[in-house]
Amino acid sequence: MTFSNTRLFCAMMLVAGLGLPVAPASAQGPGGAAPDYSKVEIKAEKIAGNVYTLRAFGPDFYPSPNGRPSGTIGVLPGPEGVFMVDAQFAPLTDKVVAAIKQIQPDGRIRFLVNTHVHADHTSGDENFGKLGVTLIARENLRKRLALPAREGGPLPAAVGLPMMTVEGPMTFRMNGEEVRIIPIQRAHTDGDVIVQFVKADVIMTSDLFRADNAYPNMDLANGGSLAGMLEGLNIVADMASPRTTIVPGHGPNVTWQAVAAQRNMIVTVRDRVAALIKDKKTQEQVLAAGVTADFDKTGLQNPARFVTQLFQELSK
Ligand SMILES: [Zn+2]
Image (cartoon, protein in one colour):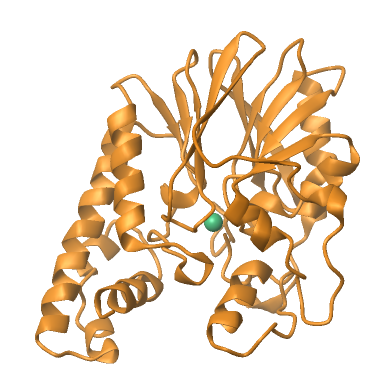
C-alpha cells in the first residue's frame, strides 16, 4: 500500500468520525508529484513450477530511492486461462496485460483474486472486469471496494467489483496446479487472503508480510490488527517447507525464515511498547524512546507508523 492510498485515507477519516473524506491526492507520489506511470516497466519472473510474478519498476517506485510500494502480481498461465493474484494500479493495466501476453499468448485471463483493499493491489480491478475477468475477494474487502472513492464521488462500477466472495479456504484446480485461497482474518486489513500454489510450492502472502524497506503495516483503519498480523505470519511460516518460495506483497521473494524473523521483530517491539505503556508513557514518549533503533539499522524506514499502530493496539 502507499501512505497516499485513497481507500486507506477514506477509512481513516471515517474512523475519525468525519464521514466520507475529501479526496486525497491518491495519484500523488513522493514530494507530491504524480508518479510517472509511463516510465514504469512491468517485469515478469518465473518463480517455480508454472507460477510467475509481475512487478513494477520505475523511478517513482520501490526499489528506487524514496519510491512508493507497488503490489506484486501473481500469474498462473495455462490452457484453462490465466489465474492471477492482484491487479496493481489502474494506469498500469495495459502494461500488465502486455506482460501477461508474453506468458500466455492468447491473453485469456479468467480469474483475479484480490489479496486486500489497497490501491496498488486493487485499483486495476475495473479494467480487468471489463476484460471479462471474474474478480474474487473476501466479503469484507468487497464491501470496502464498493464504497465511493471520495466524498460525493460516484459509486464504483459493478464490473469492477468482485463477483465471487470467499469466506473460507477455496481451491481452484486449473492449468495442472492446485491454487488455494486462504482467508486470514484481520492482519494487514480485514480482507486479507494468502494464495498458495501447492504443486509449485509458492505462497503469496499479501501485505501481511513484506520484504521491502518498510515496517509491517497493521492498517487499523481498514480492519487490520496486531493479533491477526502475528497469527497470519505464524500461519505462513507453518505452511511453508524449507523449499517453499514466499512471495511478499512488496519486496523480493524469501523463505520461511524471513517470515519468522519478521514475526519475532514484531513481538520484540511489541513487548518494548507494552512495557512503556505499563510505565504510563504517552504515545509521544513511546515514539521518542527508540524502541525500533536496532531494527532501523537493518534499513527499515519510517518506524513511526508501526510504533503508533502498536501503541494504539496495546493501549486499548
Ligand atoms: Zn497493502
